[in-house]
Image (cartoon, rainbow, N blue to C red; front, side):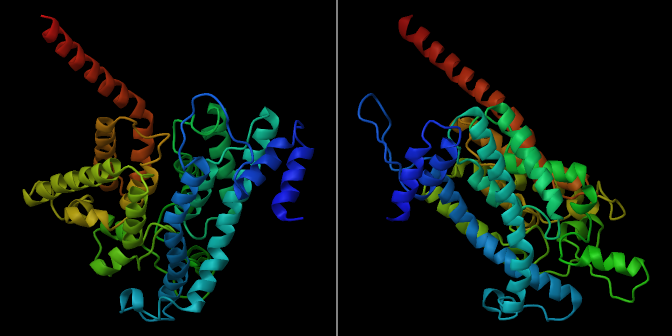
Length: 408
């Protein structure tokens, strides 16, 4: 008897019991459901929620794999044990087995905790509320490890995931009913509950925090910088990374946000499969570039001097904002969440533009944490229904005017 037959028999055996949702979820995750509709009006398509979630996960896998190698690369580079990779994606220094070992050791536990805690809560609520397990957390479970620092304690991540799933989704009714992006809700909880682990110069490179603590206790060790480009700009420091490093991703940062090249490939894949909205992605970038141009104009006009604490990030060339920080990652994988984003085409343009615009605004004026993408997206998640409401009302008024003209 094959695995499919065994799972089907278990599903039939526990049909009607409180554990039925759990067996149904495992069966439908691995195989197509045996039940099909025979009557009534139904939308027939080749995709469903599970396939849509899997497409998004596939788009993130390259970022995950790259992040594993980059975790080891940044660790050994900060220690001075390796030389800087000079051949880009063809560098054997970057694609070394030692780097991958560090990445596997640090990143896989983040993935395991994210999925383990999140899915356990999903199953628990399905059993209690007697409904089928929803596939919405499949994407969130992959997003969370990609947007947190490499050394975040696992217990903190577990607490944050539990908060995000329960408070951010289940209390609103489950998948499709939440008003805030779940992954960003989890990140916001971590940022406000444990700020020392989510910001600063030491959290983005493996070992930097622990090494500094040992030095503070009298150990004779060299400190690890671990500083991100945004952090350096915020303090008006000289940047030790060239533009190609920023674009390819050989820089410190959250696990999945660094390689802009792979994020672009992921965006093209999502757009081609019609899972991600190109309007939102493009408008986020336009909004960010617009705000960057405004700040460049302020600097060029001499209204901000070099002594100002805002000069560093204001003076960044407007286009460079797209290859530093997480603006591109947020635009592709977060802002396009179909549940929390605007639903109307015109609303998507407004929604995305404001996300990019506000992201750079927060990035410049919040030097303590020079990144504003997740706050901007959460803010616009709240206003997305309002944007759609006024877009629809404007369309209604236009149609009423046309109707009056025809009947006049």
